[in-house]
Amino acid sequence: MRAMGPGSVSSLLKTALDVVYYVLLGVAGVLLVLAALVLILSYDPGRDVTLPDGVKVTLTAAMLAEGLALFALYLGVVVVVLGRVRRLFATLTIGDPFHPANVNRLRWIGVGLAALEALNVLGRMLINWQIPSAVRGTPIDVTAWFSVLVVFVLAEVFREGARLRREAELTI
Image (cartoon, rainbow, N blue to C red):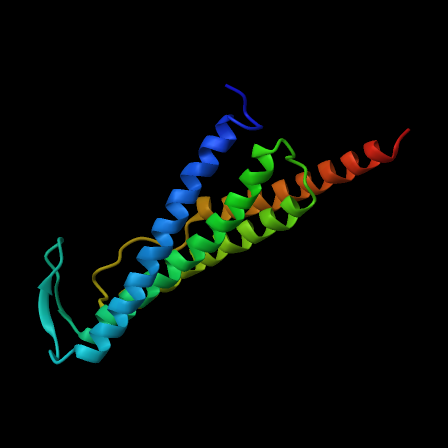
């Protein structure tokens, strides 16, 4: 099976990305609605919950709404990143990997991945602030930040590929 073009692996992945994109878009919307409903309909000042590691926590409606909203925001950023990946794969499906727009798409993917990791750090900090004994380990994921850098380098590789293609098209 070919890597690019109609009926290729990239077109199969594009279809899978389309499905995941719309499912996550729906889930993010549902989470935002749930967060709003928790705040609007909450009457319980707090509920004692025992975490899997035995820590007892009083979970309030505000904490639950905050968690749902943060997760919805996280999924929203994932949807934005997937949207760019879908468009990138659309160019692969038509057999044009070095389309000039792919450079900006890869840059936005890098920004989105950085935002996801920043939200991850923020979420861990919020949990650690509200439940000090719940989070262990470092909130910084070196692998994720390395992946962000790799995407930005790939964007520059695609920029150079687009430039070389443009030069080849001008050559007689």
